[in-house]
Image 1: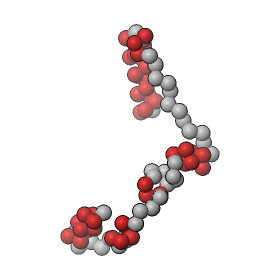
Image 2: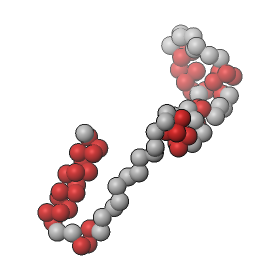
Image 3: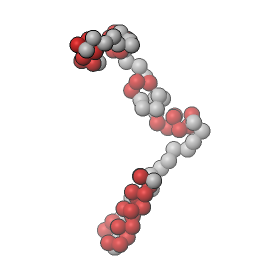
Image 4: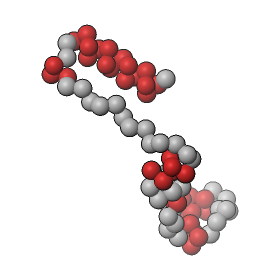
Length: 79
């Protein structure tokens, strides 16, 4: 944060907040969703947490099954 404020100063820009304010650690700043736990975010939104699909036993799968599993996986990721 100090480096960020230093770069702003070099560029002649005034930061929105003072360095002291930016250095204050907050609970929401350390969590992506703004809540203390990921489960709390989904519960707050009224949703159930999504569990990832179980990992298959690749040693028992054929090559075609592995290819299909990976294609399905990418479809879940990319959409």
